[in-house]
Length: 293
Ligand code: NAD
Image (tube, rainbow, N blue to C red; front, side, top):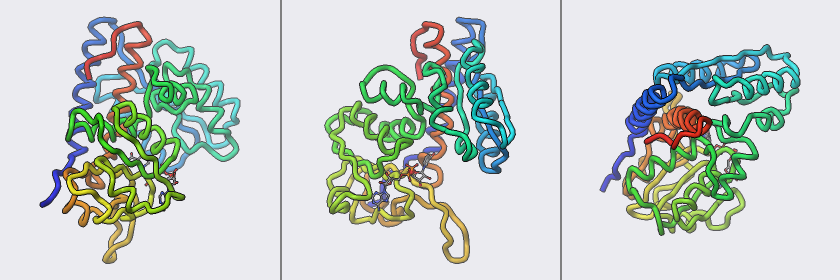
């Protein structure tokens, strides 16, 4: 039997709609509009596209988009000064530094200059620590989106065996912690895991965040499992270039209970969760309750 498709595009649109409604409520309460600042250093073409898309999505959700550009030869001190100025600007609720930064700049230092209350990417050490400690904070967008998708299939993930393949700071580790916070029994698998196929077969929720096209085979999927494929890989097939995930979708769809496609699964959730974090940050910075999202 074929699995239910988890429609990330539609679910992301629903999240953005709820964010827009929360922005209206926020404006009615405060007479202010949440603002998201994006810092772009240099002219990397892919980064320019991402920044433009984030700006458009921000405005569409009813928030203010603030774009700050610095040339590729900007010094680390200049970037740090800009982040500090945005920290001090009360009209800015969220700050995102578009990565990668040019190689002469210490990205870690710049990211950790962001005021944690405005860290809508959830990448500062303070945000990571809060997530680990189970304290309220801002959570990285792609893992947050992955959990929202899984919860559209099953509202309560408590007690399920979750296997997360990949232990990156951006995806695998925070995703594991979020699933733990949902009361899953979490296994973190990675490049040194033995018998990965057998580990995966235990998973009621199988999350792949590796960056290796179609690595997860159909028979690694437990029948009925929820499969969340975070991977985005460009491959050449039959003379055409296309995007595929880390999961061999055509085989996995025959065994899974529900599965995210690539594209159109986790991908669209990342910007939606960035907007979500921004309206949450705006509310918390003014001492308001978290918005209904
Ligand atoms: P990364 O390279 O930082 O981490 C990959 C992880 O996979 C590592 O922890 C490594 O241990 C593990 N790994 C590598 N080879 C393995 C193997 N053979 N078996 C088991 N584990 C193995 O990558 P990342 O930043 O975490 O991204 C992972 C994937 O997710 C990429 O395809 C990336 O494009 C995608 N991604 C998607 C989004 C989105 O918006 N949907 C966002 C971020 C990343």
